[in-house]
Length: 498
Image (cartoon, rainbow, N blue to C red; front, side, top):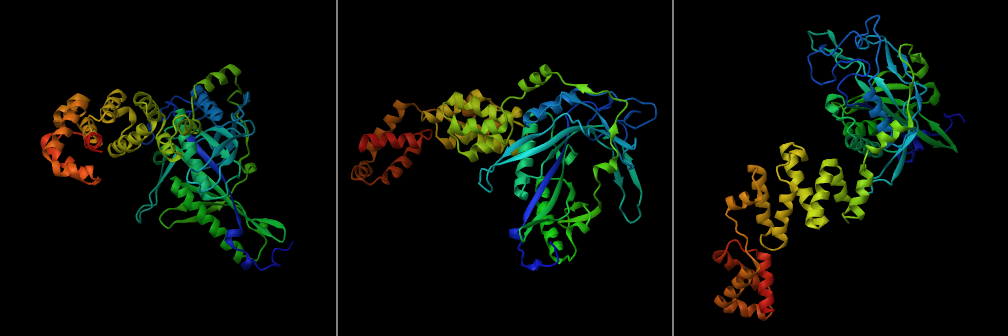
């Protein structure tokens, strides 16, 4: 079909299919680099974590970091990937100042992790549940970092090789996403899984998790599908940036296609960078093909054979993953999907805290409310982890027992909890410091009888059906016993008068 024979202005953006694939680079949490013993710690002085191997000096030989390979296999298992029993190393050739050897040791035709998938869904029903296919996940070493002085009097660039040789796992998806929202949800879920596995700290600010997006459009015209050239978007330093960049690029491609009179194949593939300041993608270069990298097997590294016993041993270390835990919380513990999302989204430690607390108090929903509100509020405000939370599960359960038995109302319970977190004190010490005294059942009954005897007019109004008068009667109880639980006292008065 001649693409210039129809009126492109009649095609609406809503009728165009956006096709998206992701390439996610994950820095594995090892103490040393992929092929040498240099540290991978972030923030060191430039070029202080280097050696002849990661600097690419002649005559050096790489030695594989076995821990990096184990973390890659563990990730592949969690992502339902086929684990290669035989994997090898290849040289990816390109020239750039921060690549000292002139090639990157990577994996081309025999990656450690083959085809897999990840199921993603949105609890807010923004899109239906989707199975995103994974093409592969392979190990490779990172390059260094170029530091550019872009000031008016600058113009010089410097190279920091501290990051050169750091182990990366590149996870490549099939082009299965149809919206930026789906891509963002996938990234959030993937990051959560990596955190549960403990294979990476996924700190995007430090470059531990980086993402590139490949975007193009499929336009249906006269029974045929026209595809715009694929654009790879780089410099996506947050999930929100990834979402915005994909949305912008899809609209940019559609506008360019509508204005162009040429056939789609006339335009080359591009690599564009996301500029967060102007909220737009910017052309960087034409996109390379795999042939441009001239891959060939690395002669300095032998192939690796993965034993079945090693794979099964790593599989046993995985434990329950986020999707399985959401199912556990919504079925066994009867939580709302949104509440389960909040708890699971905070990491394995918070889930374990909740499960222990729910078992202790015997009420999953009450435990979820307190964890989802009070515990997470404290963690967010103090920027701490659940392991640093100053209240033990045992003491939290004891506090909930005081409230459920009526010996303390919820308002005072929160005050006690706040005192425990602020002063790092125990339950008994916090209660004593605040001057709270637990009021037993018999004492509450006596207080209710005293209020009725001293306020016969209000008591009669309650007998006559004026339920609001109970509030006035309870208000008078504060002078007699400020520790009385209003809810329990209300029940005692109703039992005596109604």
